[in-house]
Image (cartoon, rainbow, N blue to C red; front, side):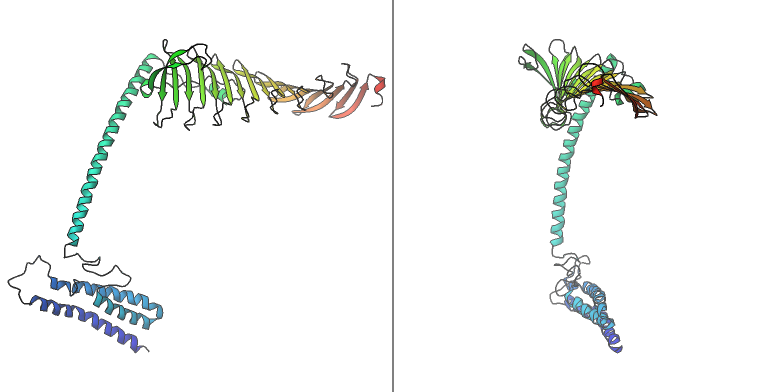
Length: 440
């Protein structure tokens, strides 16, 4: 069984070594063909060296060697005999056809291995040179466009630099915010500082004079104003529009697209150049839901439609630099059912309409103990007439409210009928002033 692989390998080697000699004989016969005279051009390609079909003997030998290796690899799956048989068959096939199965194709004018002596390679080179020339022309045109755009941007930057220089020479730069200012910004009970407009150069705006019709902005007369429009991305939807009084040059109104979705969502009004009112569309539904007022550099009040149903349901009032009062309408009936009063940014009392019948029925008083707001007195209306008839007092134990006394007006005459005393939250004594109430 072992002699057959050895014999096959010997035959394969003999065939492989005989191919160059056969190719040489063919080459000799072609060289002595009738009609040939004189020495040949050493740089010319001899058709005889291409083989019978335009494939050279060297290329056939190379294909045979590659076929030998390919056949050995494939035949190895069947053992040593298969490897020898596969190598032999593939070698013979590749030597005759000049092709390697599963390889890159035949070598010669129709394959991908050798140069084409019949002019196809020259055509491909000419086509490639033509494409390269076209690409260079396109690159030159693109470079010219880029240079033009860079020049335009450079001119715009020079204009901005000039505007900044004028602004710096006319005013002193604003100092960095202090730690106190930063802490106030983070305190929800601090009155927000009036938003400042960005100092943008006029060169980046498009300016025109327009007429504003009567009552368009709540005014009782028609106005002639200067409108400056900023459309930075040039999509036809401005990010900001500023309106200035034509005579004084003072800004009187501003419209903004704060989320850059193409729709205006902030409308600001100015008095003597300072922001006085601002209306916002914070959820992007195209309807205002926040109304703000400003004076003396601070917000004075804010109204919000929290659920975007068209009913204002949260109201905040500021005094000086602090929140003074907030009111909430939870059921959207237009009446506040929670009112919170603040002093020095601390909650001091609340009023609640817990049954939401339009009348306040719970009043709570708070006391600040070690920075904590703790209820010390609660008054309740249990009859629904809008007047309290139950009064509870609390003592503070370990930072928590503990019931100390409850007073009740049982008959609604405005006088206390029953007083209950508690210690540690437990009833220890009850006093009854009306004998008709005994037993309770």
